[in-house]
Length: 340
Image (cartoon, rainbow, N blue to C red):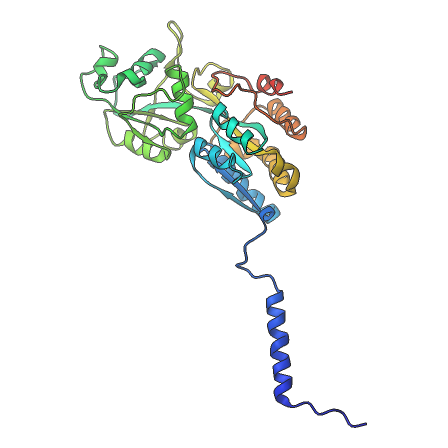
């Protein structure tokens, strides 16, 4: 029997059609990845270096994309409570209004402490007259009533020179701002407003480093990174107490008060249960936290505290150990026991 004749044009057309079909059936490199293929994180600029270090190592090991943003603690919680992120970094506990926003959106969360920080008050290295700050002096300098009134160093302490003081501090959307004002002024977000504010700690470092009349505050890791450009000031917690510099030792032994604080990540309970990549990331985070926290110059929790945090995570205990307000001087083990 004679084979049917197929014109060459038809063969070419069939080949092209098959090729086009094959191309369109393949996954495209620029196609949007499925939601579970990306772990979305945002929040505190203070916690960012830790999470970024963890994310880099996790992506090498697991080849799962992790995005880490810096919106500040408050900005991060806004995104988290809208369901836009899986994990929120925080340099202070979640606040009552943020808890309400999450509840309204049906978002439960797991609160995990991951490191310690010491808010560090600094001056310019050429400043020779400030030997230490008392909490009362810091309050006098930073409280709302100081705005437009306390303008010189001499007004804070009569033994200091009658020269203008320049102030640099965390932005109002920062957990560092909340914690500092709670610890020093006695109420979160209660501060004078006439100072240079930024969520970018490098801006604060540059401000103090370039002005002999300046003082400011930011996290301990940023101080250590810039210890040749700015000078840390010892803090006197109460009358008669010794002046104490921030360090790993003074944070761990509890003598650097009231500016020692825990740092947190908050995980969406729904994301943790429905997305195995999120669970794998947090497992990896906690297993490698001590090494990576120290690598980026933060203060790691003791081994027994990391073990307690890991148990807390495995139990998927939702909620917070705080009452919707920042709390100064809390211990990690006591905090975890509060969540039943």
